[in-house]
Amino acid sequence: MLLGVTGGIACGKTTVSKCLEKLGCVLIDADRINGELSQPGGTIWVKVKEEFGKCILLPDGAINKKALGERIFNNPAEKRKLEEISHPLIIQEENRRIREIGQKFPDKVIVLEAALMIEAGEHRRVDKLIVVSAPMKKRVEWLFKEKGMDRTEAVKRIEAQMPCEEKAKLADYVIRNDGTKEELARKAEDLFRGIKAKTEEYGVGSKH
Image 1: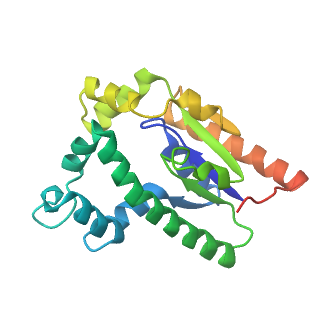
Image 2 (image 1 turned 90 degrees about the vertical axis):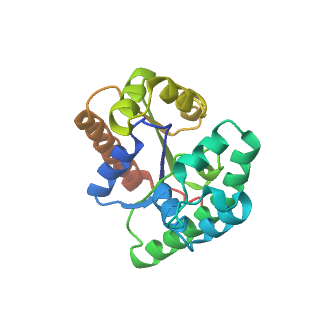
């Protein structure tokens, strides 16, 4: 089974994914793949350098994420260029890992975590889609405390993304992150046990 986990920035999707991993699932993290392919010499790095120029590189050759982020944040055309570069390469690597895990561990549940899963159309290929949502205030405070982001900037970043309410409409399951981290983990565990019970009883059709 392939479970998709997504949600907006600072909603708690990583906490949910890590909980599922502890329960025995195999986790594929799209953000981590993006980071790996964006290292100097990686496939994303090469194309980003070609498209945006050396001006977005740090002295050591690494991509200056802050500079690139500021460049695309208020420029939809530039943002689209970056997504057109990165999404296909990330998905290609995800597919490779899914095949590899399926061959080695055919009975394992695979969790695919991706912030832009719905925006990239990837939600259509997972067997079950889990959307993690959280109140705006909680998300802003997390970005402020954990990322050192100005609260006004945090609100802008959140509002620039697809609303959680819209993502929830496409979900098979929604986990509301409105309590502690421990409570969120318990919700994820309860949901997974429920999914497993239904799968064992009725089976699940694979979309991939």
